[in-house]
Amino acid sequence: MAACAAPGRDLEVQALRGERAPVQVWVEQVVLLVAVALVAAFTITTVPGVRAHAGYSFRLDGVLANAAYFVPCVLALVRALRAGRDRRAWLLLAAALTVFEAGGLYWTVAVRPLDPQPFPSFADVLWLASYPLLYGCLLLLLRRQLRGIGVSAWLDGVICGLVVRR
Image (cartoon, rainbow, N blue to C red):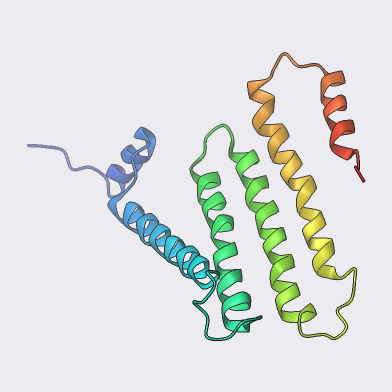
């Protein structure tokens, strides 16, 4: 007589093997399909002649664009949740993309309707705040690949990255 496995044991074994449950695969496929549809829909609206009226449209440039820009945030977060060694780097990337998108969303809702539009605004602060997070992500991803690089080379990279060209 075969021994009965404890409930949930199969899922634990699948997780240890790196396998995903069928429901998880299905959810990921639906999320990816929605993401592709959002990006495709926004991209199509940017083609000249597709829109009925030229200029800014809150539904297309505001709502649809922000929804499409939110897709990379979700994809980076999903990658972070599935990553092994590089989880912190992917979390930083997800955070950077989310902060950048929060800036776009704030600009769409709070700054765009104003006349005159303030500069700098809180949206600019959010956009600029995403860069240190992106830099941290790059450092974490490159650190493992470039273990032999000394501190002086990293400082050279920082200095070169801070140079402003006119």
